[in-house]
Length: 271
Image 1 (cartoon, rainbow, N blue to C red):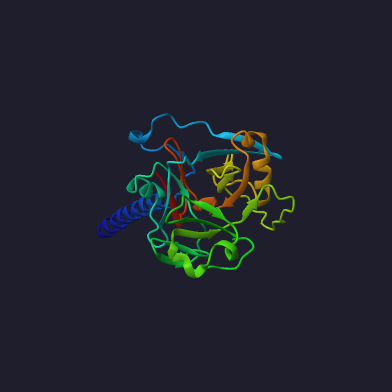
Image 2: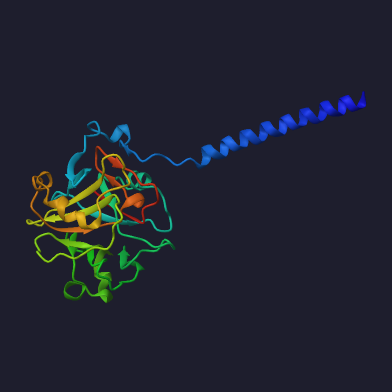
């Protein structure tokens, strides 16, 4: 009789252990599951219209969707560092009451900016000599945001305190230049860009593959994108500055959120 009771006890205990292991495995799977890439609407109270259908262009055998925002004369851009904090762009967007925005430049594995980065009179990154990171977005104390490309002519790294903010990124594309560089980067990725037209007006762009929000054109395809008739209808662009892209990029305006998968290093908040 004792053997029967012992057998039943062992069977019951094994069943409980197996049930607990099964439940734990399901919780672990749910915890590790990666969110699908989405274009999420801004919270309802901030949305004036439904999420618009993106614009589309075809480059080769690929179709790319895109959103853009023109920065009006009465709108400004502020640079918000997010390297150590690594908070979501949605949180940054709401906390700072941004009406539109886009991520900033690149950062390294140690979550420090790649290249010169200074905001609020605090420098977080040092200038690097690079043919790829050859562009700068900056705002002086008296000017609106501008794109520049030559450090030696217009920017002195020792005078970074004279800017409200400045950061280094790239590449910078000269759309009117016939001599175009050859890019070795063959990796497609979502591209977030700041473009300047011939009148000096700035536009923010989010460009991604139609069926994969984290994929997008290769670096060399940016020229073809801005030469596409659908894009040329928007404006006659002359300069384009590449920002961080892929999974560490985010874009917002009053109707659209293109969300990140990895934290953005910095955010350009428009008001």
